[in-house]
Image (cartoon, rainbow, N blue to C red; front, top):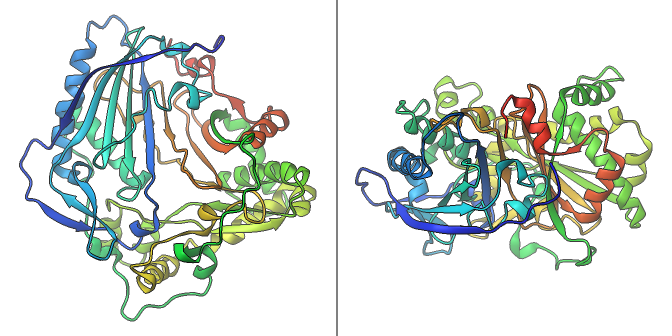
Length: 461
């Protein structure tokens, strides 16, 4: 990849795409786990090269996308609705087939010249749409080389990444005239609270009613803003990190090992800034946990559409994170994760929300991450189905979530690389000085994403 190429995006068409079949208008309540999400939008995008020798036009590709969307929204009707407040001020989903805002655009740039390492410049506000209405917005952008970028922005209160991934695969299946392989379930009874509830005191450490939040403390100056960058890490480097994390006889996952490595990096800058303490959280999906011991419920949870997430976190002294070996830090990660990878944890979290309704609540690490020191959250994107989002003109040469989430903690999402088996693509939304330190100190492990790396996938951009 050469020098940064600036480019403009011109919108050529805007319309609303609704489900092809008329839907009975109805209200869908948000579950207790949905209610833990603030009103933030999540972006995701996919880059496709023009098929070799193809005469397929952008107009045709956009038509395929829209027609497939009208079919997919019949099953995924939640994405065609609107979020409105109920009588007690809680958000609910009005399933009225309002439809999805669909934008067609042209960008005067070649695919290989997109600065994917810096999505703040190349993706944000250009190729990923700003959602102005409804639950989901889509933008299809033709590139100068004939390639195409397909991007979505959706309301996180309605869907987590697991749910969005289901939709993306189903949308692509519709585009290829296939049957939907996994129909979504909107059965809110799967995540109902218990009567009576049973709440572990540890949940008061992890979650907080918004009214109980302390006033924000500004430790970071505007000269150190949160920025987004995308890197890659090879399978060999991941194996090496895992090996170091397992040195003392413990078996640690690649995610635990990588998270521990990042935590040590963040601690270095925290020490320079005079902080004594730093926190890290890891997003846990509860679908498999809630289905434990009940085969029918497990099957239903595997296609459940909505949020089924928890964010356990741990805090450690900066000096220990810097001085201790990687295996020790990985043990700390494993220990705080253990409390949240159980069925009882998620049942208790559902009960905790019920006990506080209608008062909105948040994960503590999202809402006051920098109160005692820097904090960040790692969310595994290993289920990101980048190779399955094929609309009929080939698999994406690249895909990533884009989530500058608005909290005062950082956010990191590792995803499978489309270029090389076992490699990860890593989206990071961290403070600028944290990013600079990671690039300086970990350049042999995390490398900026470039078109040269992506061409390992045997696609010539």
